[in-house]
Length: 428
Ligand SMILES: *Cc1c(COP(=O)(O)O)cnc(C)c1O
Image (cartoon, rainbow, N blue to C red; front, side, top):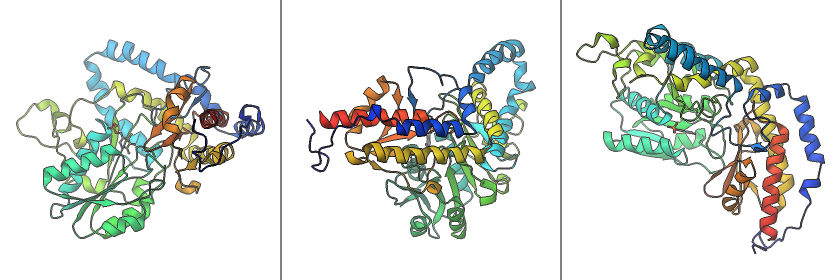
């Protein structure tokens, strides 16, 4: 039916299923992988109905330990301590867990990270807080291809505050570069909002160089680390970053709807004001007084009652990341995506599939986007077969390779299944 669509080249049938050499290579890489045993800690790693989970960058698998943690919490903490739990432990959890995220994954010293809200809401609060530190300036800079919520939040704030949005242009298979950012910076720039790892291409932005540029222009930077935290090590303090936010349900495996975290550099905290002044970010929540006085430090980023249940699973992942070490996690991630690039080229290169992620592993996060017009129609069949990537417009399959829960064999099996389905569609 679609014969000839592939630039007039009709692919010939290849017996992908019986080509064992790449499968053997994948198994060898697993055997040599020092982090391979961690995969056994994840729930569902041996589930025969899921042959390849390639979406840990969107929703990480649960750790088996989380079942015990959730059960024990309901029984002993919620059930046993009841309202006393707030005073005993729970009220401190947003900062305690924030500090651990900062130390283990972000290169952030204590007192600068807090868990609260969703990424979208924290973006709003943090961008407004940054703008309040640059009241004389009128522009927010953001990348054209940034994740939708980041763009929508920025556009909403700009409309609200009478500010303009300046757009950084970037190729869809790359991301923001220092050159692209420098083109739009000016004396009017108040705040720059960028993703460190691009959600589509996985391109890694040069955090150090861009942060320096933004500061040289007298502006402040907000980094969205949703696709970095837990997979690509960052060094927020060393880079002199101002603000950052990120999810905890992707590579921090916090589970569906787990809350986000925010980072505010110590030097900005004294004068910090954020727009959702709630009682639990006030200096004396239980004084029930009149008039809002912000709490000292990062605590003032909190608005309402912290999502304690939502912070449980990610603590298990922090234990595991601490044990494995972020540098080892990153090394495995690079090996996985490099293996995936080679496998895609070998099995699908002749069908016109292109790689819409950076070739240079130093510029690539932990997922890979591959493009073909046929992919849009294939996703539901793949999901039904237990091969689970996701789809991103216009025609990209996104293969998320979560370093601790994804094996090389699983990566191979997933890519082979995609190649087979594509071949069948094209020869149909
Ligand atoms: C996943 C993601 C988000 C998610 O925002 P939520 O409010 O948690 O839904 C935001 N920004 C980026 C860059 C993301 O990748």
